Image (cartoon, rainbow, N blue to C red):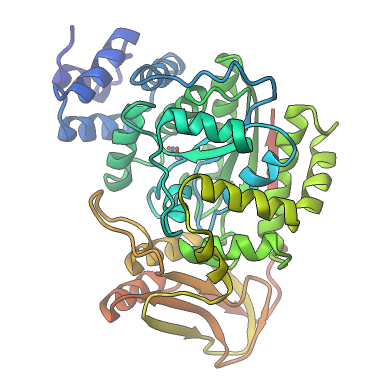
Length: 435
Ligand code: URA
């Protein structure tokens, strides 16, 4: 049996690891025989040298085998989920989960926390007072029986390997790596026992995988590996050059989703959400095509039933429904700073990558795994690309608990907003769909 150091060296020297090597290494990490620093070195070696198709599959299997899998075979409804590789302002899951559940489909969602410069669904949900993503598997199943939907994270029981490795990737610069994405994402989806999976692969400067060709490869690989596990799968490549929607943070993103479910128009957020839902409805047999599914979904986003299902989903996991009623009160951290336009023109760029890192500086994400999130920090965009702006008008507002955090965020924001005299090219939100 190869020792941890031999495994790291083998990967460093481009050697192909066997199924047993990978399984032993992951088991060793969970039982303490492989340390965090050895795992970090391994992840960096994989980041530089990649993995073969077989290695990627074995790593995914090792993640699944690291815990229990959920058995939803008693449900006689289609179980469908979506997962994003992570983007800035990417909050679609908060609308998709309740919306799809209103179609009498089961949405057993194991979601993630903030990763790299991008936010995480669980962190956003935990900005709602009382909400717990750490419920037991039994409770998760009871929620599905009662409401068709539940959202949890990886636990010590379910994909514990991903829970621990995800936290290390977040702070060691090893997020943007195809085999690590695939093993992390697909393992959670197989463990939750969904029948069909839709992947939102972000493409552009603010994606967790900013190289466009690599993003396309990732989309294909996610679909291929998921199908290998016998599940239906579709990947949608969606634009992430600019943040999605108008809010970046945690509570402010929940607030934006509630506003959308109550009728506010946030065009890019609604479009991406509708297409992803469309793919889920198509896959589930509710719609005859993704386009038809998109149309049906877009009509149900701003809808009382969708919002009611959202409230039910939050209440099932101890979230305070009264707190949700504050959604239009703009609860924010105490210090704010407005970035204003220095000239007249049209907003030509809002660089999602810089804006993502700025939001982490404000307190909306983690720089090390033990960092506590400030749920009320973040960024509100008042203008998006293509909007006209006058000198002195506010482009965006930053919120944090201290001036020091605001200053650090402003440093990250340098050069991230561009104003031009001419209209930028129209944003194409849906770049491709891969089956
Ligand atoms: N979401 C995950 O669960 N894993 C990743 O690697 C990226 C996004």
